[in-house]
Length: 147
Image (cartoon, rainbow, N blue to C red; front, top):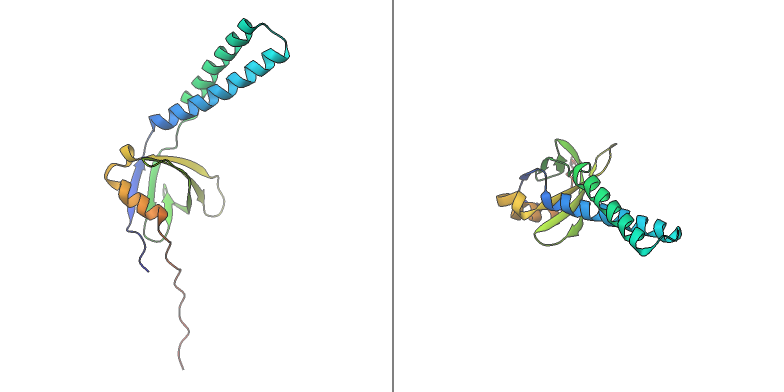
């Protein structure tokens, strides 16, 4: 069976990813602040102010201090490589023109979540999706000598 052809995609700073992370962080902090203000029995006005302030702080944190990982993602026809390190790649979310992938390095190392978009991948998008969803080739084992 043939595997997908080799493909290489340079990942930079994805603004959609940063925006999504900022929204998630802001929403989480706003919910926490509203819960704490409700628990402290503050007025609705103070609860709303605390939630708004926390949402802004969380969004700033997510936007500026949690950047998307940048580097080179490569499929060489046999294995995935992230910045030259081999590992396993799996789909977390597939939203059509946008993918969230999880790269787990072989051996030791921390998994990295990689946001991939059609706009950033440009010409490599079709090859990348083909490689992500294709079956990996079976490892070749040397055959036993015949007698």
